[in-house]
Length: 561
Ligand code: C2E
Ligand code: CA
Ligand code: CA
Image (cartoon, rainbow, N blue to C red; front, top):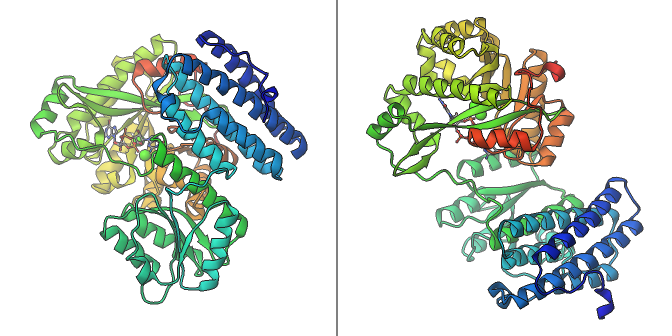
């Protein structure tokens, strides 16, 4: 490659402002490319555009590297291959190989996301954290086009049938990776395995079967990522995955035999990229970590409730069709002067077991109604959702108290949704129904939370006057990789529609899930993809910045059944 390939940007030795101008140009080019993808341009057109984009990006990084060299940026010293060198070899690869339209489109989207992340990171700091990006882009870009061979993630195939082992090794090879095969599970469990390995595991093997392999490795403290393979029907795979989930063993994918080659190659490439990213940076959470216990004592909890240490974070609920905010769910946290911010999983159960929940709920109600006025004075007129506990359903005075509190703050009860889980009702069905009916008659909305995880969801729905059905996040999060979860989500949406309830999906973590829910006709959505729970100030700012409907009605009925 000669220098004439890099004429696009001027070399510049001092320049942060110049970087900004160049960033804009680059983003403009990315947008043009994105548009071509959307318009379904031919693979020739796309390839040309992708090539231009790589040249421009490389040119951008080459100049940035010069700036960093001039500034003697320390991270550059540890970098073996610079960003521009990677892109340069990427271009060579592009010229050499035949890519189909889908692969190019996928690559373009990938490059765009990487650049956006990079720009975001570098704008937040004066000097761009070059190495972090370098690792990320090096890994991901090179995985995408199989430029480099990485050895840090080992792939193992464990299947008693030799022909399946051979076939899978071949398919892994097509994905540009390599794998080691085992036809004996007994031999395999004595092989050293580390957490960053990927194991393609057949469930049905004579002697030691797949479940036993997972259990044995788990007992040894090994937590690799699995792709489960089985010749039995899908239910076997599904329940094996449930076993793994219960032990917090990571099963990334399930595959039925005979194996669909295309699917297999896609899965293994994706998973390899994810695992590599995991290895080099911490931006993708791999295994869900529970919040670390803070050892809050009962006494500290009592003090917290009475001395204003409870704080509310809010998470928006959006109409999935119009993208407009219909309300905010209040989620309680405990701001302890020494222990810091404590999450509800550390104190709700303690409050329930020690008869403190009614005081806690009252405090949450008081804070939420106070914040409601603040939302309103910021020009936002949303609905507010409050979570209550099983024990709150034993307090027969609750509907009247809540009603009076709302009235005193001039809040229409229709603006307040009370969320409760189905198991909450089970403690005392008759008292629960009494309270729920009276809450409803006073105008409050009622939401059945974590729907599908309790024992008699349908009976609860039948008996109690719910207005909203919240599909549990465990189904929503998995719905694109797990057919059973998808079926449950579909049925919940249909059920809500039939019963004339608003359907809400919580735990939306990606655009893809959002799109799928929109396609399925789900009414409202909530999740990290839209916004994590945040302070009221951050929420007001968020509404302002995203110019999402400020004066939204608390119940946006435009899309309801
Ligand atoms: P929940 O009512 O089901 O609330 C949803 C939980 O999921 C929240 O956790 C929220 O931060 C989290 N979440 C939301 N979107 C996503 C996502 O996209 N991905 C992931 N991974 N998580 C997401 P949080 O705030 O820790 O609350 C946990 C639970 O504590 C709540 O579950 C609720 O049952 C209980 N809780 C929270 N506030 C109160 C309260 O004021 N009173 C009572 N009784 N319980 C509360
Ligand atoms: Ca909730
Ligand atoms: Ca929930």
